[in-house]
Image 1 (cartoon, rainbow, N blue to C red):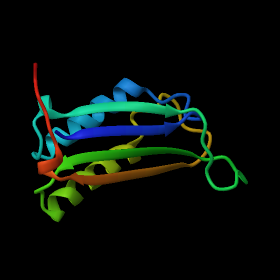
Image 2 (image 1 turned 180 degrees about the horizontal axis):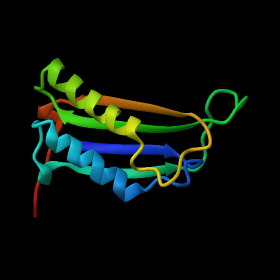
Image 3 (image 1 turned 135 degrees about the vertical axis):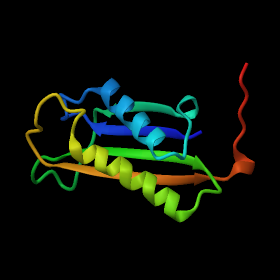
Length: 120
């Protein structure tokens, strides 16, 4: 734990998936809240999407950070803000995007009593 799921719109053709995951994991470790080997990140390109009514084209990157319950609001806010700052730096884009990009981060509590894990 934690689990991070990244989704982004397919019109961000120059997004470097591996680089974004590496940057995200690095930022999470730097918060001091998580150990590197506990972070599980994955990324999905949303091929079919719609923002608004398609009056003008935009793009998005949306991160969902699932963490076990027990963290303080201050800790959750620090993790979310650190991830948003990372997205704002755009170091994961090979070229500047052609349109504006909506950046979103969600920090989601998972009740410890409902999370089950085994290593085999």
